[in-house]
Length: 185
Image (cartoon, rainbow, N blue to C red; front, top):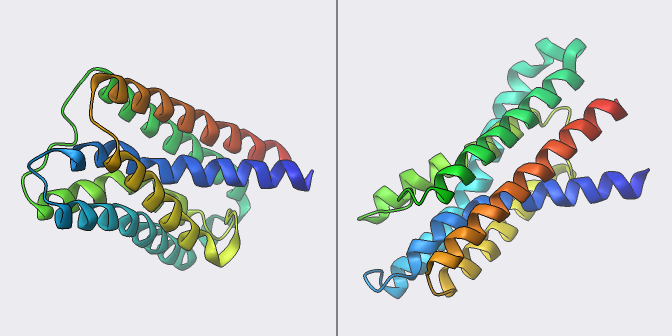
């Protein structure tokens, strides 16, 4: 049972960290300087951890009010995150230019918007914290790796299609985790 829980926790970490992959696709364009590329990768990874920690801070402040319904709230938040990931995957699949930016300030705003699933995961941190206190560090590290991988790949239509499919896979990891949490509570 513990091995299955660890597997679901690792899949959840990968699903949240994968959010850094699609926006980093545009960091490989010729218009982006190498220093801006590295800064963009760092911003994507940092926003994941910062918003997760901010959500955790808020969750510790007021989620105690909902202690009686904790498993249902964890399920609902994880299901919401999964639906959000599916919505993003469908937008990527349609070919919408979701990740176009002109300056690093615009890219930072994009990174904040992309990291909202991590914020919602942080809200349920009092009841669902996969790896304890170092989950945010792991999230930042894996997000950095995903963004670095994406920024080093050549941008093409195949990469967009694969980004969409992997986004759907990430959504399935989160929803499987939601059902695991609901039925194991």
